[in-house]
Structures are given as C-alpha cells and as structure tokens.
Length: 56
Image 1 (cartoon, rainbow, N blue to C red):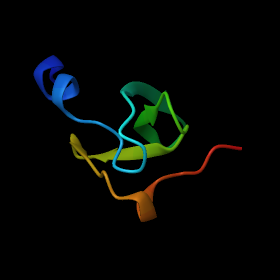
Image 2 (cartoon, rainbow, N blue to C red):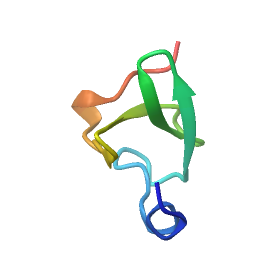
Image 3 (cartoon, one colour):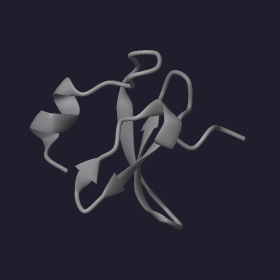
Image 4 (tube, rainbow, N blue to C red):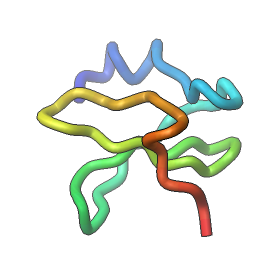
C-alpha cells in the first residue's frame, strides 16, 4: 500500500486515520478512531462500512 494513498484515505464511518495491520485473514486497514477494520483484497482497500470487521 503506497504512502501517498494512505495519506489521503480516511475511515468512511468516522473520518479517522487508517493504519495498516496484518491479520489472520490478510492485510487490513484499522481506524484509529472507531476501530473498524477494513479488508485489503488484491492490494485494493475495501472501504465499505458493511464489509468492515467491527471491534471486539
């Protein structure tokens, strides 16, 4: 994931910053604000709230 892309994308739910993390299912973008984790599929972030994993 390019640093330029990470600098401009935000969480669609709360507009918080996203952090790249590695999960069991693959790479995710986790919101520092609300905690939602968005999957990255084939190098493309899926920034849909319905597709996000909710925090525990």
